Length: 169
Image 1 (cartoon, rainbow, N blue to C red):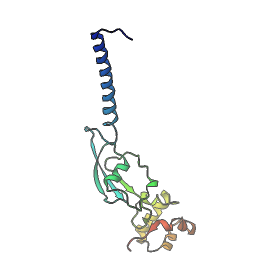
Image 2 (image 1 turned 90 degrees about the vertical axis):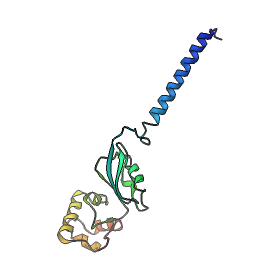
Image 3 (image 1 turned 60 degrees about the vertical axis):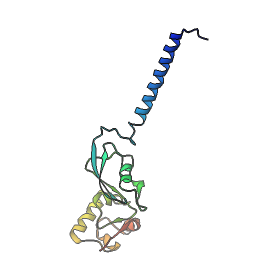
Image 4 (image 1 turned 120 degrees about the vertical axis):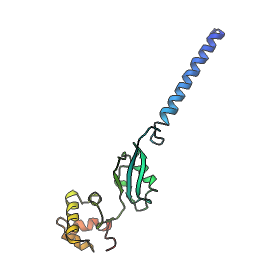
C-alpha cells in the first residue's frame, strides 16, 4: 500500500512504539500511582483517631488524602452494630481529628455532643441540654428520666428508645 523505504519503515515503527510506550506510561503512572488506593510515596502522613463501632479503636497513621472508609478498614473494620449509613465514607480524613463510627445504639450517659446529634430528633440544642443534665444530675438510669430534659417528651422517647442504651450504671 505504502511504498516506504527501509529507513522510513523503521522511523514509522519507532514513532508508533514511542506513542504506545507513552500511552502505557500515562495509564500506569497516572492511573495507578495517583489513585487513592496507592498514595504517592511523597504523601505526608496524618494521625487520626478512629473510635466507636470498629474492631480496634485507636490512633492510626494515614497518608494525607485518605478517606473515612480507609480509616474504618485500618481499625479492623466496622462491628456488626455499626450504622455506616449515617457517615459519608468518602470524606477525607484530617490531621488530629476523631472519627466516631456510630453504632445502632448510643450510650446516652457517655455520648458526646456529636454522637447525641446522630439520634433521630436530637438536634444541637437538645444534645446540649442532655449533656448539661448529665453534668448537673448524674447518669440516667432509665428512659423515663430523659423526660426531665426540657424538650424531651413521650413522643421523642418513643422515637429514640430503641436507639439508646444506658451502659453500666
